[in-house]
Length: 136
Length: 136
Image 1 (cartoon, rainbow over the protein chains, first blue to last red):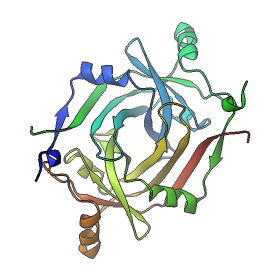
Image 2: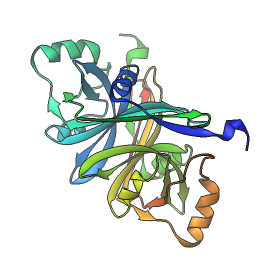
Image 3: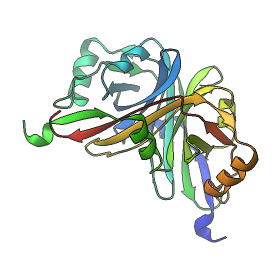
Image 4: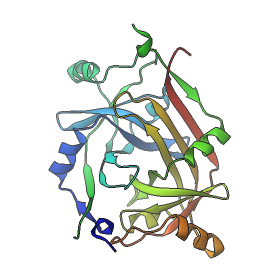
């Protein structure tokens, strides 16, 4: 077994996990759709410590409003699967008021696609890990 | 608005979606953990039309056995978010017998990490879309 075969999982602190989440703009939300689990890609920004998401895929994600949902984002190499992944869990709510104006600017809808709702996920639970080369 | 700003979403047929799923080895499973929604990265192969997954992150994914779960994989550009995403939904079961031997060879555990269980997800529902440049 060469050194390159040795990998380890490092758990991330909450602050490190949220910091990493802010470095990417794309992830997946898990919610319940027609009484079944569903995963849909979404874009995100962080706003005052909360995760704000917007769907790319029409209005299905509106079903998530009012639910406890999980949102995961990360950077993981398709070749060696090294990288990091962060998940947050919280109750999804529609974004309104001044936060909506702020987030509209940060999460602009794509031309030619009907924009979905802006949805806030307060990160009540945060977990994350990094998968790296090297011995534990 | 330039042509590059025009994007469209194309829904994929079930056969096209499963074919694309077979071209990648990595995705995310959504399941219930401690009565809350959870998303965890996993590697996958297709075996006789079913999705077989193995977790990278220890034993939490074992909680998914017996549940209806969703599994999503895709290739989406972090820059322009063009690409494709496929989701399958089905009841997660432990893989056993000759299928386990086949899949052990295809989904080998990583050196230095304790391997998780092999879990089969028969794709009872399949959905997928491609996000491309161009007019609908």
